[in-house]
Image (cartoon, rainbow, N blue to C red; front, side, top):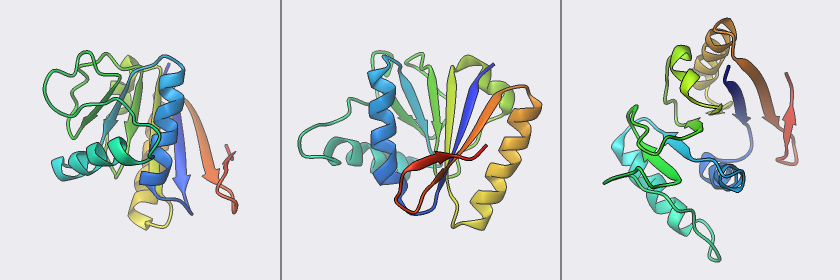
Length: 149
């Protein structure tokens, strides 16, 4: 079964958190797909990952042939790079049964948004019922991740 991690943002923003999680993914030798809600957001993430830090960048693509790319950005269900990890951000969704093709799924949601919180709770129930291993991480007052469940 797939390991499904829920990251509950309370202090940070997705744009601050996502690059570090992608760096950890690449350090493991894994490929990733980052799924968001629309093409405009794909373009924003694409630009951000090139410039988020002066001394480095994250190799990625959002157009063309993504087969050789370690990180693929999309607003669809395409996985051209045979990714081991799926990031669901900005309210992007998938079916629990679609996770079987991944080693891990990371759902990042804004805990300050009641709708996002409700959707994350529903996805938790669905993934747990489907037999996936689920874990819940919440930001501490210092901004570090603490496992809650």
